[in-house]
Length: 94
Image (cartoon, rainbow, N blue to C red; front, side, top):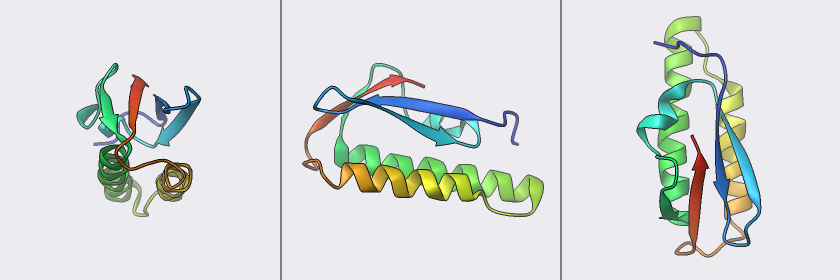
């Protein structure tokens, strides 16, 4: 069930820049832990899964998928495409 209207998770990229990622539900907490260090490849995969699941939760409650979750996936894929797949990033906050 969708219990929160906005959630974000924050990541630190290999160059130490910080990115904030939108999620329409808190489901990302089941995929990531604060302080976790993972590869870019794993981050993209887990983000897709989490945000697709979040969008499905929105659809169950409201009858339509979440375009914000789709946009967040696209943004993550865009900035991660410039990174080496095996490079490490850190989940700063979830």
